[in-house]
Length: 427
Image (tube, rainbow, N blue to C red):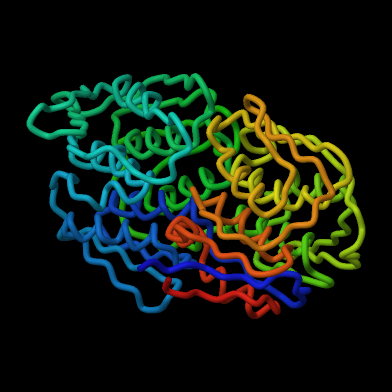
């Protein structure tokens, strides 16, 4: 027995949808919250399964977690204990690796299993480990703990240093930053990632008493050794969820307003939507899509994924579904995760003319889509299939929806409120 999502497509959508807090911020903010000596209250927490897995890990460490409402977490580390993280909960999400930096910094050692998450091909954590080693830690793989990594700080603790990342990795930037707040002296991360989520995590750490600056640039500076306390913090809106609803609106809405967004975080996606023929307006915290003719053939385009502020890799799969409405040949070249094309065979089942050539997806349209039984092979593939299902004639049945639930807060409920015919069933 399995829970699936079923969508009866070709329904026009209208209304307002509010974007939840950032998934990619949340999964780092929760481990970062244990770095202090007092409770941390986080507002705007999305209701996703990755949060549930992280709460499970916090409780394994003896951290008290309370949820006064659906969007608020209070994380109290005062009774926290230094324990190995070797349970199956670690493998439920990739972001469990943020406990590497957090626990190495706080306790000087950590034993942790390798993380899980979406299968997007080779995603090594060598840059994380290189950063920890430059701070003075040793890295080993104990034989008695299969598939585990042991990090140990030197006697006297971690020491600040200059670290240059071979690529601007978001995960490595955040992980090294969390360890470095406890290192003695100054740490400089060169070629640091610039994503808004990094600014969000650094902002919370500074509220806790850290001294981090240079956020949003490729030179991140951490003055380590400051004691950390508690704070309150509100998560930034989820720019990937916002982009997904922009694409849903472009595909199927007559008139839709997307609120609780930061349009500056979505410049690359908004420019591409304008390029293919979608009308948008925006205020400081909302985006309006309107005048969308369902029979209009959109213009083709070429997309290349890049680190922020370039076109986000997390958006290319959902955008591909929309490109089936474009007349002619569109290309999507993936420069971040080479294996991020597993959605193309699923879209082909629904009538798309799409295939992969090396690191590029080719989409030739316009092609009408029809309902089919498909599988969400990863989180953003799931979003692409939801968009395709909304566009398609007939019924689409999506399997492996656990991936969708990892990153989208109440996706089916929000879509029903906009007029979609979407439901969950056990099959």
